[in-house]
Length: 118
Image (cartoon, rainbow, N blue to C red; front, side):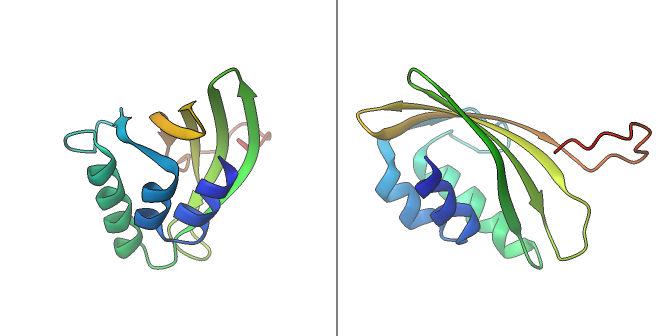
């Protein structure tokens, strides 16, 4: 799971990472991705990377239980930009990623809580 994340997002190469780590029948649940397929998800991430000045993903926490892996990550579209909080959930089968869900929280407009989301 971490090898996929490192290649696709940290390394900014989603398409080769998807071909290597995702099953052919991969199911994407992100509502922004048309069709919810492996190819559509790779294209969505390539476009996101192309549109961000200096995209950076950092994995903060990883939890695995059975066939599910949860990643708590931060995403910054550019150096010095406020971070998005990302919760990614992946389902695996046969050492391949077969399904993905996520929750993306944009930077808070007013951080009243002294505790960071990370």
